[in-house]
Image (tube, rainbow, N blue to C red; front, top):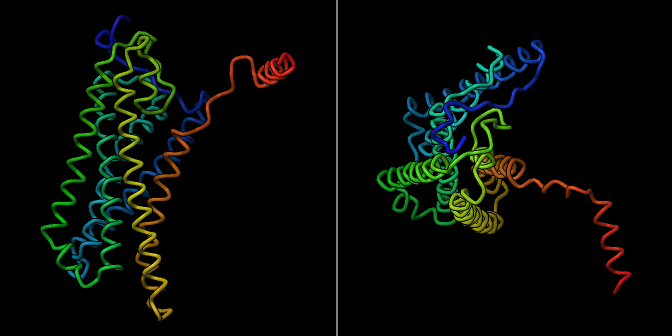
Length: 282
């Protein structure tokens, strides 16, 4: 295969080889998907129908539920279909579309979590200016910025990734289409442009993470100055759900993408022997 245009389909990683385990994975994934669908749908319905919940915090929560529904709907249905029908094939365009949608929803969700940290900061540290800084128009603009930044991020990465020539086969060692695994199929040195974009993205993600951490440092300092224990408990209860979601997103990303590299080809024993010999020669 000389380039990406000659590839008409990819093959994804199968969960299991036996039919019984494939069906078990199908039912497990179906249960997870239905639970996510039900939970987020209840949040969206409650916020949309209850006028008492028409506040900035719940407006951002509604957007977060929509993004969460979108992100899980781009990966699990195809994985369920593969397990049910015992197939691993996915078309070239059928791979590019989930890559774009997954990046769009995930990046917009992370941007929205950053905005929600600012919302909690203003609500606790500057309550008298809350109505001014987070009016309805400001909330709509911040939510639109989160969705727009996710769209731009997804367009850049998807266009860059699928313009890279692929000459290492068409087997992806993942159960859904993902940029790092697609880049492993790239020809030598042809993926450096996308790697550079990924480095810039990591810097932006780290910047948002620092903003969230700094916001919560200020929030905790303000909460500890609240004289009543009931007031402190109320403030912490407002921040706890957001902290849990941020912790889950960050820990999942660290586990998935920042795992330690595999040991060298000759193993750690070879490296220890090499270092010992080098020290003896000095």
